[in-house]
Structures are given as C-alpha cells and as structure tokens.
Image (tube, rainbow, N blue to C red; front, side, top):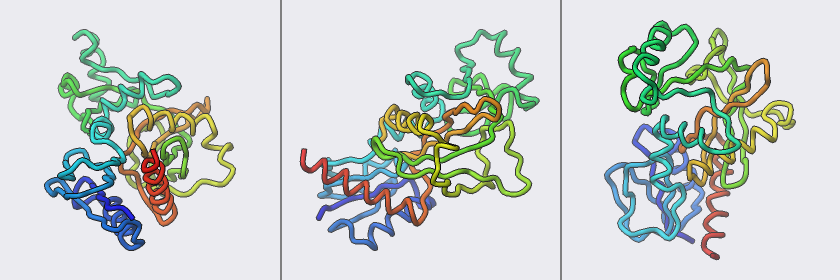
Length: 266
C-alpha cells in the first residue's frame, strides 16, 4: 500500500472533496491526506493534483506526481491554454484573436463589436472571465474568440492515452445556447449513448487525448463542441479538476492505481 496526498484547489472544490472522500472510504492507500493552499504533508509517495496549482502540498518530493503543477497553471489560465492548443497539430479551436498582436486601429475597429455583444466575437481574459468593457480588451491577458453555432457539446474525460468517459451537455428548458461557446451554467452533463461514433466520433476523441497531452496533464476533462452545419468539432477547454459522478469517480481511482503501479515498476 502507498502513502498518498490529494491536493485540490480550495475548500469549495466539490469534486476534490468528493474524490478524497471516495478514496478514503475505499482505503485505496495506506495513508491518504488532503491538502489545500497552505498545508504540507511529510513522507509522501504519491501526489495527485486535482486542479491545485498553488500548494507545494508535500515537504518531500514524491516519487510519483500525477498532474504537475506547471501543467495546471497553464490549464488554469484560459489564454495560455488556448495558445498551447492553437499551436498543437491535430487540434482545432474556434478562431482566436489576441489584441496585443494587432495594431491600435484594428483593435478600435473590433471594439464596437465586442461592447455591443452582437455575437461576432467574445472578449475573454486569461482568468477565464468574460471581458465586459471595451477598454479591458487592451490588457495583455485578453483575447477575442469567434463564436460557434453549436448543436452538440461534450465533456470527454481523458487519462493518459485513453478516453475513460464521455458525457453530453444537455441544456435545461428555456436555456439559450446557440451562438455561444461560453459555459452554460444551467446545463447538465449526461452520459452519452453507447454508439459514440454517431455523436462524439473517434476523430473528436483523438483530439481530446492530444489536448490533454499538449497541456502536459496526465488526466483532464475536455470540453468539445460540434458546429451545427459542418459537423466539425472545436475544442474549447481542458479542465484539470473535471466534474465527477458515481461512475467516472471509480474510473479515475482505477486509473490512479494503475498509473502508480506502472510507475512503480519503472
């Protein structure tokens, strides 16, 4: 049995708490600790980072670290994440414009479109927030992204080279999701039909695996959307603390144990 630490981002991280409680109840490790931003644990064999990019987590250097800190830092900043994905072969993201790379007149030309929010571009910043005021776009961490008229959205859970779960995001009644790549807060992810090729096909799944690898993560939940007319897939986010349920939480723990056993043999 192995001494392990699970580090999640803060006290309100529901998925981190759920993962810790599930692993603790199942006695997967001989000793299991959870850490937040300020706590540090000694004599640890394994460190699992669940969206935590700030805590050192352990006093010693664990033999096995699942999801490195630097990778989570990059995944936590949407602009850094989009730049990495945009530069990775085989990954398609929505059209993105970085205002700092444009001349001032070009930025001025785009500003009325942004402030009117008429669907032509969304203004975002690296901290994952929407930019509401036109002058905020001139900040270094801002970018513009062209919306996609989507008919499907999926959360694809990836661990290493394997897709371990696919869920479709279904809008609740009355929710407007057309012409948007923003998070639909009232939506829910539901498990896909077994015939995945009809929806999130093999090519889309391969893109998700590439995205997690490109970010330097060992695992992650990838959000991918399908354009209504062309049926092309566009990758919009990689999450280092993906949503959990009774099914995929077991799969994650199984993959943690498998990963640790393989690393221990190397």
